[in-house]
Amino acid sequence: MAHGDESEVVTINGYHDVPRNDEQSLVKALAHQPLSVAIEASGRDFQFYKGLCKSQIYKGVCDGHCGTDLDHGVAAVDTEQQRELTT
Image (cartoon, rainbow, N blue to C red; front, side, top):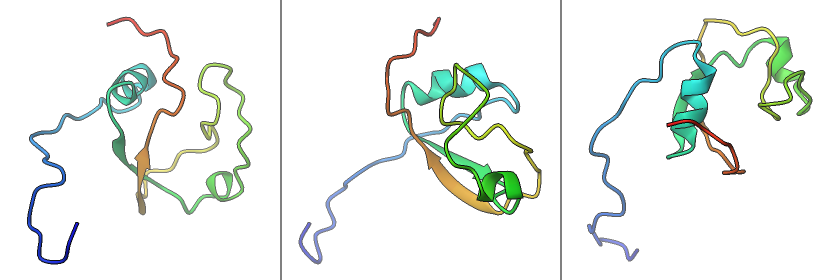
């Protein structure tokens, strides 16, 4: 995009909240688009996370202690697009 070009690159025309503590709804939403997520990133479980998890369904998900002192915003994306979801 050239400097001074004011053409639209993206338009946000709404949003939906994903219910708290509902992993299935989160996975369904990720199948459609990236999500903005607030997290507590100050905990040791998150800071020293190395990609290993106990869950066989949600590989790559940090499943350590989850705090409620939200201090970071991140984008969540589904890079596999292979989940079998009921709609």
